[in-house]
Image (cartoon, rainbow, N blue to C red):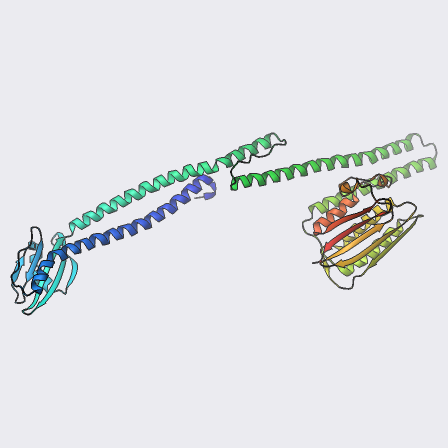
Length: 448
C-alpha cells in the first residue's frame, strides 16, 4: 500500500487508530489477567471457607465432625483410612484415593465431562494425618471469564471505533486552515496581486506557516519586480547604443561623400559597439554572480599580486591625465581567502575604473590590502570629490549612476558587480563618502 497516496487526514486517523488498537490490546490483556487472578483467588477463598471449620475442629482435637452446609463439596478422611464425610460428586469420589495421596495443593481436576477446582489439605493430629478435600465446579469461573472477555472485546472495539471517528473529525478541524491557505494560494496564482495569505488569530504552527509563506511571497514579488526592472533598464541601455549604431551606419551609407568621412562614421559606430559589448559583458558577469552558490578561494599572496596588476591596468587607462595610482599591502602571512583571484581582480578593476571616471584631469587613487582579524580588507580611495549624499544609498543598485559618472559612458553596473562578488564570498562593503574631497570604498573578504 502506497501511504503517500493517502491524505494527511487519513494518515493521522489511521496512525492514531493503530496506536489506540495496540494500547487497547495491551490494556485488555492486563485487565483480563487481573480479572482471571481475582476470580481464581475468589474460588480458592471459597474452598478455604469450606474447609475452615474442619481445620479448626481437628486442630482442637475434636473427633466429632459436623456435616457440611448445603451445596458444599467436601470429603474428610481420618488417619486410619475411612471416609468420615463425603459430599463430593461421584466423578470425584472415584478419584478420592488418588486425590488423598497427592500433596497439599490446589489444582484443576477433570472428571468425565466436568472440571473441578480441588484443594487438598493435611491436618496433623495425635491420631495421625487427616485429609480434607474440598471442591468447587470450575464452570462458573469459566463462565465469568468468558463474559469478561466478551465485554472487553466489545468495549475495546467500541472505544476504537469512537476514537477513530474522533481522530477523523479532529484531523478535519485541524487541517481546515490548511485548506483555506491552499484555496487562498490558488486564488493568488490565478490572479496575482498585492494580497497575501490569511493569517489566523491563533498563534499555532499553521499561523507560523502562513507568516513564513507570506514572507516568501513578498520576497518573490520583490525579486520578480527587480527582475522586471532590470530587464527594462537593460532594454533601455541596449536600445540607445543600438539606435546610435544604426544612425551612424546610415549616415556613413547615405551622406558620407568621401572615404575619410565614412571612416569617421564607421569608427564612431565601432566605439558605440564597444560600449554595447562592455554592457553585454557586464550583464553576463552579473548573471554568473547571481548563479554562483559558493565562492572561490585564493591565497593572500595571490591577492597581493592581483592588486599590483590591477594598479598597472588602471595606469594604462589614465591616458594624458595627471592621475597618480599607488598601491600598498602588508601581507606577510600565507592564508586562504574566500574569493578567487579572478573575482578579486574584477573588484579592483571596477573600483579603479569608477574612480578614474569620476576623477578629472588630475588626482590620486590609492589601493591598499591589509589583514584585519579574520578577514582581509581592500581599500580604494580617490580624490575625485566624492558622491552626492542622496546617491550613496543607491550606489550598489544596478544601472544606477551618479551625475558625474554619466559622462564616463558607464552603464552603472560596476558597483553592482562588486557587491555581488562580495555577497557570494560572505564579505562586506562600506562607503566612506567625503563630498568635495573624495570617496573610500572598503571591501572585506573572510579568511578561510
